[in-house]
Amino acid sequence: MKLRSSVLVAVFTGAGISILSGCSSNVAGTNPVPIGQAQWSITAGASASEEALQALRFYPQNISINAGDTVQWAFPSGEPHTVTLLGPRTALPSPDDPTNAAPAGPTTYDGSAYVSSGFLLLGQNYRLTFTKPGTYTFHCLIHPGMTGQIAVQGSGSNHPSTQAQYLAQAQAQTKSDLAAAADSVTSFPFASGGPHLVAGMAPGLATGQSPLTILRFLAGPSLSDTAVTIAAGQTVTWTNESNNEPHTVTIAPVGATFPTLNPFGPASGGNIYDGTTLVNSGVLAPGQSFSLQFTKPGTYTYHCIFHDDTEHMIGTVIVQ
Ligand SMILES: [Cu+2]
Image 1 (cartoon, rainbow, N blue to C red):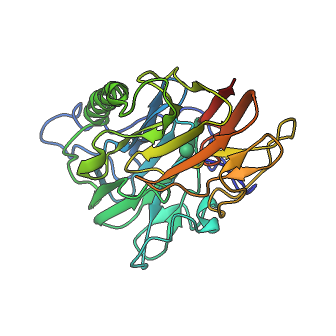
Image 2 (cartoon, rainbow, N blue to C red):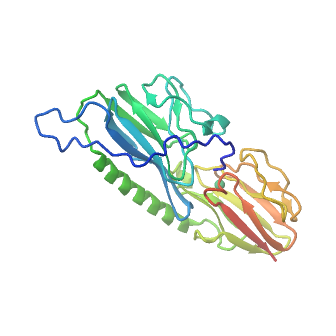
């Protein structure tokens, strides 16, 4: 994701947090949990293969904590995510709302105020202390459907699971998701090496939104198939074969520095490229296609302007 604003803030980047969920080691018959202040970990998303494979899920998705406890979310991927709790609001902001990138709200949550981490990625962290019993849903503003729930019990309650149990569950789910994402690449839907390319893909295009996605332009069923060779005058068509990510096909004039563009901006430059103009498909929503005729021999690099920086979604057309 292109992080256009400078508001990207590492909210909490402190060194390791000790995890104090362990109610299991207490002596039976005594109050098993110290009052408040346990800390719990959730991971926002997962990725593999140089950010090509992305799992758009929280690990674990559901935890139970006590009032006074703190949750720390880790953001390991090149694809950014947010942790956002709506408080009194009844609807999520639009995914293209530019204020989504910035953190908002206090560091505690009792359901009375909107709070958000803003866009975080690549090792950043976010922490929130829950002060009031209730069941709270948290969302990623970038990836609709990426949600989780925190059940906050009264302080001093028994924890139904330990941090170690949640961690084991999270690791198993992450491993299985990334394996499924890797497997889905073999379902490349076109003839390999042909002029019809994938602009991102996801398993289960026809069956609704997947929590997995592949951030690559592909000419074949391997993550390294990012180049296609055509003859001058031929047209290349890209289709967004994902069900969960917008992409663009954007190509700059030869020799020009690739410009900073709003990924949600309109299409420009038409459907013929001779190396002298900027061509931008505009947003390709899931299922949408874009075609571009290449009239001059050369080797051309093009970008998805949502995913070209930290996720490396860049492809090559070789025109002979
Ligand atoms: Cu993209």
